[in-house]
Length: 333
Ligand code: AMP
Image (cartoon, rainbow, N blue to C red; front, side, top):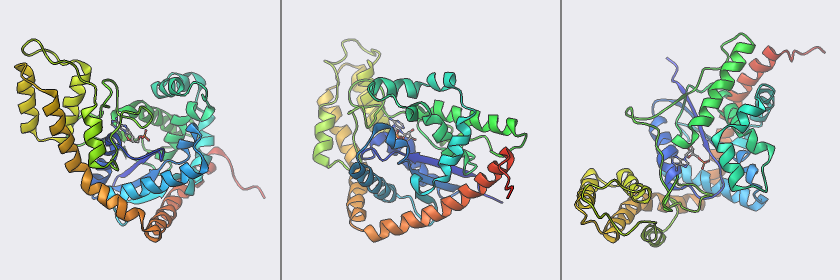
């Protein structure tokens, strides 16, 4: 029996942070055992922020090394660089013809990004969910393991896949489902600045590549407050965020311990942050060591990228030929 197909990617716009890891990459590693996986580095998506050629190149190399260091195995999963498979742009062009301005303008990710970079609200930002849909459906994905921040974009991918199938009266594309483990909700990793999610452009992230000293510094500086004044008081967002991070990286005993202290108004945020920093370091330090080693091996990185590009191209071309045929691009001469 064929294994279900999984597709997901990350933009090479900086180091991978804990949000990328717990929202995406850790799930990629778990899924590669039982699914037909395509994990890519979304370098075309990253052009919406206008990186320099040098930054783009080093970002791609960094994420490739980070994928491998986290445990994605190129023998089990197809790891590739998005721009090595330009077929995705051809499908993106076709999907754009049936993507409407109103629905694209309404997506939260577009509104957020337009707010973050008001001087650069380009068409690539607007059609970001269309390119993302193309990434996913070109491999006929059944599942997409992403964080909660991508929920709406994934909904758009589902919509575009359905729309195409309906328009050409054929179930070309499976409708991709969000994938989460153990019946849990899609995860949102909060940042250290007291509100919202951890993100590269938010400046509130802990990276897998940060050294332990930096992690301690960042966590100790995280936004908190002067502490609870009443027993069992509801946690304000900044404090809830610290506890949410702890739930992700610490043992349940540690979480219960600090929750009890909070509820009895005995909590000392200095102690909580120290524990949180050490638990984050326990997770990231071995990954960081592996990243450093892999980054030194250009031959290995080139081999992985080439192997991935070949496999991804084969899969993409097959779908694209089917799509072009349906649209009516038949060879006349
Ligand atoms: P990006 O860095 O926006 O390219 O995101 C790459 C992947 O990481 C996507 O699957 C996101 O859902 C996931 N991700 C990024 N930030 C977070 C976060 N704070 N919480 C959960 N998942 C995240």
